[in-house]
Structure formats: C-alpha cells, structure tokens
Image (cartoon, rainbow, N blue to C red):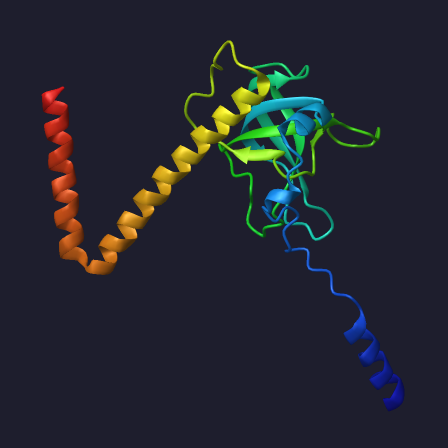
Length: 202
C-alpha cells in the first residue's frame, strides 16, 4: 500500500500543471495580428458600456462571461446603435478580478455564434486587441471622414491619454500621503486656489 502511494505521488508531480491565471494575451507585440486582419475577422465591432454582469468570468472552466451591454456605436456589423444586447466577452489576460466592471466602456471585436445552444448571438474574438478599455468620454459620436482603422487608433489613443492622466493623479496622491498629511493638505489647498484663480480669469 505504501509503495502504491509513493508511485502515485511521483506521477502527480510530473503531470503538467495548467494555471488558468496565466494570461491568454501576454501583451507581447508579436501576438498582435494587426488591425486589418482583426477587422476582417470580426463580424461586428462595437463600442459598448457594461450594464450588468450576468455570469462570473473567473470560472475555472472558461474565460468567457455573459454581460448585458449598451451599444454606443457600431463600427462594423448589424448590431443596432443605442440598443441593449447580451454578449459573451472574453478575459484576454486571465485575471482573477472582474475585467468588465459595471458601467465601464470597451471597444470589442465580435463574431457570430457557431452553435445553436450558445446563449448569445455574438461572442468576443479571443485574440490580442479584440478588447480595449476606453475613456468614458466622447463615445456618443464618431468623427466623419476617417477609415475604420483610423477611428480605432484614435479611440485607443484617447484611452491611453485618459489612463495616463488617471495614473498620474494616483501617483501624485500616493506620493503626497507618503510625505505626510501636512504636506498633502497644503498641496490640496494650493490646488484648490489654482483652480479658483483659473475659473476667475475665464
């Protein structure tokens, strides 16, 4: 009996371990197939807002999760603008936190369902670049006279600028509280005074 236990233990040690927390998209440039190919593969490309999370994306069996979404803009395909639709979205990074928080905005590349028993008509592509978290501003209207690729790149640049501002604000706050409450309160006071002066001069 003891020999059987030892053999079983050795076998378990050599079984490959699958870590579902490993990123599906490791953000390496060579994993991105390029916008023209991604656009071609997608049946629909939309800008959406997450209205409600209907399933948990942290399941150990799949990185797909179902969400009720509001469609701000349809850049490609037949999903109606200003409509609500249920979609299967994919966690490209394999995180154990919710990647699609309520009221967050995303640029998403979708394909039509392949099986009749799928719960939604569309699901997200499982490729790097198929989902981008967007800024919450300026999504109601798209610029005219631009190609689809240009619109996508401008949306991503706006997201970069927005996230950069958020990061700088957070870093300033953390650095201030590291230096102590007095300096932090003084800095807040001067920031408020600067804001009042700017409003007065306008």
